[in-house]
Every structure is written in structure tokens, then in C-alpha cells.
Image (cartoon, rainbow, N blue to C red; front, side, top):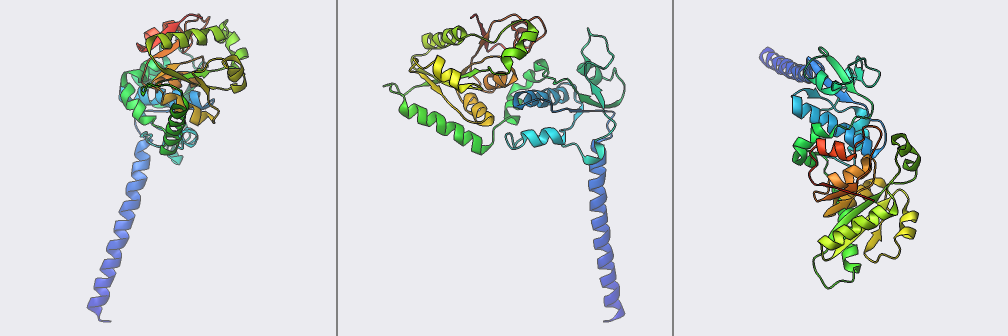
Length: 315
């Protein structure tokens, strides 16, 4: 091989090396850039599906409302991504997992001020903040509801299964009308019977659901109630005389996808129940109850969050 060819070959190899190195450095800089804003937020992933959805939505809403950098924690990503594959939030790099200040009830801050918002506008100084205490702040994400619903779009597999369930029910329902109004009904029981006592109240009674179904029967000519619960045996026994009630029994993800695919909703208590209604796009009937502590589904909080499509109903 001539010296000229050897020299050209050497230059080519050298050029490829520097191209590779620059690409690697760029990727490193991109990951580092995610960790270096003056203000950076992520969120813990505490609880079950409804809680984690609320944590994601609150973090996402904080980023939208205050134009601050928010990152999806790997723990939260692992619990949500298979269900909602279209999450757009940047992922938290492995190099950025340490040095976070948790914003929760242990953080010393005046109770009459909003901790998350104060951090977002810089009142707590620069830093990396993790939203704690299972945050669900509807007022942060609801102004961007249409975009959030796109974020929380179920996977194609779940949407197909949910639509198959509703199609099957529609074929079985004995009605001459081609127009059926599906009303999703979620009934929370089991552990919540004890848990909700901390708010000096009880879970909604059977009478509440009966009244809510009557409300929709008077409003629509052919409603069909798709009912899901953490206690399906109770539902089958309590509502067995109602011919327009269909109790479904899937996993949590499929139950939520099916209820969210309905036209309107009747919800119970708890964050899972909230999301079945919020994602459905129609009217949401919820129990008009009083709570001794601040609560996601208290009529006062619903009003302050401007959830105008939520309708309170007495038991």
C-alpha cells in the first residue's frame, strides 16, 4: 500500500473516531442538561394506579403551568408506561437520582401557602424537588385537560379490549333503539370502608348508585350501566334485579379503560374512581358528601378545581 493511501486511510479512521466521540459527548451533554436547570422537579410514585396517575398529572401540570423542568422517575415510568405508552415527559437520567429535596408534610413551610407552586416560582430557591405525599392537585392539570387526556391515552391493546367489551354488551342488550348511552359505574369498597373513616364519613351507600342510575334513565332513553368494582360479588348481589346493569370483571387497567370508554360516569370515592370519570369525557355524577379533611372529591374541592362537568348527587 502506498504512503498516500495509508495517509488517506488514517485520516478516514481519525475522522470516524472524532465523529463517534462528538456523538457520545453530545449524548452525555444532553443527559447532563436535564439535570442542570435552576429548578427541577420529579415525583414519587406512591400507591396504586389511580394515585400514580394523579402524581404524574400533577407533576406534568406543574411543568405546564409554571414552565419548569419536570422529569419522569423510573419507578413511575415502570408502573405507567405499559398502560399509557404515549407519555411525553422527559425521563430522569440515572446520573440525576441523588440530591433531591422532598416536598411533603415534613417540609417546614407556612400551611396557608401552596408548597409546590411556591417552589415552582423560586421562593424555595434553586434546587431539585421531589413532589411527595401522594400529590393530586387537580387545579394544576385541569386547565390543560385536552392535552392531558392525550398523555393518558390507553395502549392500543387496552382500548381494543375495552371496545370489545362494550360491543359485546351492545349486542346482548335487548332494545330496539340503535342508540345506547353507556354509563360507567365505579364502586369502591374493600379497604376504603375503613380508610375513609379518617375523613369522618362513609363510602357511598347502594341508595346513591340507585339514585344516580335513575338520574341517567330520566336523561337518556336507553342507558346501559357498565359496572366495575374492587368487590364485584357485592355488585352482582346488590344490583342483580337491574336489567340494564352489566358487571364487568377485568384487571384494574382494563376496568379503567372500559369505564373511561363510556359516554358518562357514576363514580364513588378514591383516585381510581376519579380517573374513570375524568377520562370519559362526559358528565360525571359523584357523591355529595362532607369530609372533615381536604379531599379530592369533596364538593368544595371539585368547585375550586372548576370541574364543571362533575354533578354532585345526594345519597
